[in-house]
Image 1 (cartoon, rainbow, N blue to C red):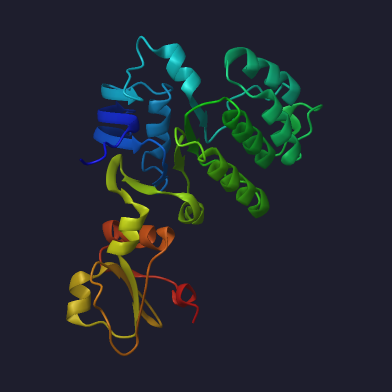
Image 2: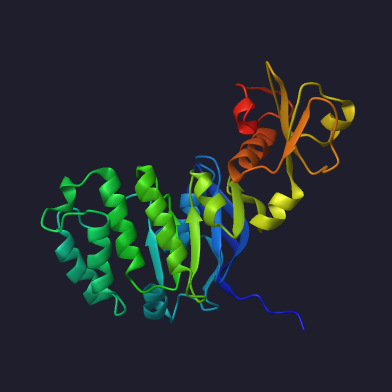
Length: 300
């Protein structure tokens, strides 16, 4: 018997109208117990989708289910089981971290105060000064700490590592992996820093202009596509080329053809960033882009 896949979040026929931007009839399932990476260019709709899921933006129509439950009638349970780090700081920056700890402990019954103190210390966040004196990166780290300590089963992250130095970025991704040691936990992770997703994501969802254009497991994606670098382009290569780019050294593209070979041809499994660049390039400028040298991705 085939094992049933459980969803932490189900989005069905979602429509959002912000005037200058729309999401129309979007369907997406976020699988429980997995890390799903959400990628897309600026303005693709990632933050709008997250804010709609978090009830900060009103949907015109459609259905959002949290662990199979509607929000109406289950507000308290859902709000305590979902935590979010928004792209902007949403807590009171006039407060000190110690005060924020008291506030969140009073609102979230599963808030882990001891873990909060440990993580604030781990990220070198002073507890006795007001958050408004923190740098942008420090505020983002505090937002992450607060979300991680709420005891939520679904953690939604909108650009959590932007503005954070590489060392602390690595610390944050490690904490996400530690969080996922509990098989009941789920992460939806929107980011422009796709190397984070290469490290930890199980699934990749790509958005473009309010639509889902790619939704698959990272393993399937890496097995499906190849990144090709060649000095000369044959007609057969051009036929299967996706996001074709030309520079002074030759051509670069992704393809589903795994049998490409020949003199001056190099083939490798693409990173998420390389795949994203070529898939987005295919939409914007099919087979027309002339970019900078791509030699570095092959270590030439």
